[in-house]
Every structure is written in C-alpha cells, then in structure tokens.
Figure 1 (spheres, rainbow, N blue to C red):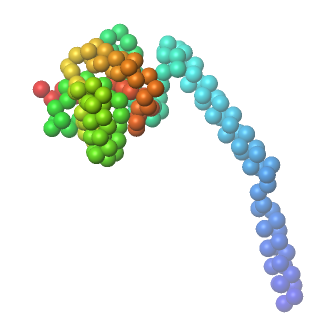
Figure 2 (cartoon, helix red, strand yellow; figure 1 turned 90 degrees about the vertical axis):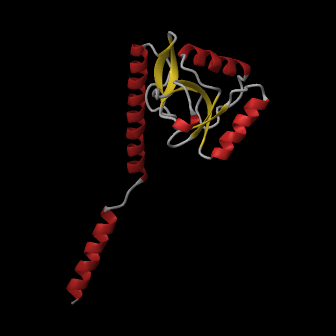
Figure 3 (cartoon, helix red, strand yellow; figure 1 turned 60 degrees about the vertical axis):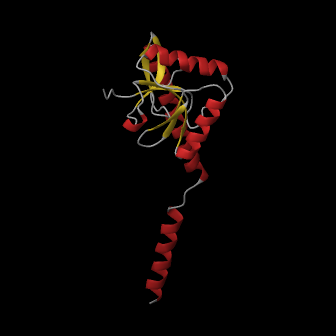
Length: 172
C-alpha cells in the first residue's frame, strides 16, 4: 500500500514540476511574434512602394475601403449598396458613419446648419453614413469632398478613419 502511495505522489510531482511555464518561455514566444509582425509590416511596405501608393491603405482598411482611381487621383472608396429609398446617385462623399440612425441624422443636421445644405444620411446594410450629397459624376463628388476637408481640416471623421467616396451600383 505504501508503495502505491509513494509512486502516485512521485508521479504527481513529476507531472506538475515538468509542465511549468517560465518567463523565459513567454519572452521567447513574444519575441518571435514581434519579429513576425515586423516582417509582415516590411513586406506590406515593400508592396505599397512597388504599387506606388506610399502610405495609402491598401489592405486591412478599418472602413473596408479600397483605393480607387477617380479623376486621375487615387482615393479611398467604399463600394457598397445603399438603400434604394435613399435615392443616392453613383458617387457620394461620406464624412461620418454611425450605427444609430438618430446619431447620423443629428450629425447631418449639424452639417446643414453649417452650410452643407445637401448633407443627409444614407443607409447601408450595417451603418448609417452621413453624406454631403450625391452625384453621377465622380470628379464632382471628389471636388465636394475636397472642399469639405479643406474647410474642416481638424474635424474628425466620426465612425470613419478619414472621409471617403461611397460608390454604389447603378439602379437606373
């Protein structure tokens, strides 16, 4: 009986003593993860340089935007469908996005009070965008967005990492 008792204590001690993680193990795993992240960032920077995009966001854009050429310029554009009831034309400069329609409506009202008379909301599947208007002319939408950014250089883009152009499929 004593032998079984001693053997079970000895095996338990070996099992628990051999499975301990140490600070050294954590540190080495952390260092490997940091090196991997640095390699991925370097490869992404090289890819951007090859494409001639500099620091423009190409992948993993927080808003899901893609770089699109409009009027001989590369701009951030979000290709999504907007509810037909909102009657948005092909191009719509977006300056904010909200999950709650009341917040988007209040922001659009603030913009209209500031002189952006065509500011309104447009509903996508997931968010309510505040747009400055809409047009079927890409350069015109880009000009409108540029004028907003120039007039409001320090205004944050609520719900977006920066203002962008929404491009919708044509319904007509």
